[in-house]
Image (cartoon, one colour):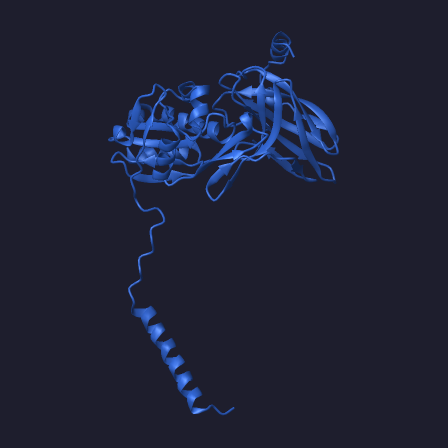
Length: 157
Length: 197
């Protein structure tokens, strides 16, 4: 995608408190999608979100796609014997009746090959693919480098 | 059941041994448990972003907050550095008594990507250090921490770094004081520092 087009949707979708928006697909509700500002575009960005499965059957997040990054992948930070590593996660389980967080220090999307540096206040679309519920496109708000999560009135985060 | 003479002797011996052991437990001085975190003084000599060698002795008189990480790390490292930045802001007038250090475990790539650009984006007080492989290993060994390169096709350049994610506090004399495990909230780190300054 050309940088000009990309800048256009970044600008168009930039409005406050976007990370407090909810999206639904089937029995799933997707909340608090956010990313952290990056220093340039050479280092990977990150993607965090909260997924609630109100249904009676288990689902799983199996993929993420976004025009903001050429190679977005799911990863999980794990700490074993005091050493943190970040293996690739094939999928993130979203069990029936539960809320799963992609949050600092756990599951997260790693946005490799950023097409543009992520700036605080920007937002970008991301399409999440679930095993059962299928695809849903959400808006991801870019928060400050120091953010720990969005500040939403209804938030659990 | 009839016990043979030998069996009687053996049982008596076992009984005596048991009594003796019990008495020993009662009277013996408890042996001091080995301290899990015995005081020690980590030391390092590593170049900063400008290539100037900095060593642990340079920070004598200050508390140093040391984090080992790499700038390509999207999750753990920014989260921790963001907390360090918050702590430095909240220290106010006392901030000059604390020196935060970011020691790269991926020095070659971090130098290429920009070390000071990364650390100052979080807080101008954070000093980034990135040595060669031997200096980096020596620094990590002196802190008794682990890092290693993990091949990972799903990571930038085909590898990622695993590393100890804690934040280490070194006192003004160079003594290792404590560690803050990953995820320790900034106010907790701040309160601990304030109690020492």
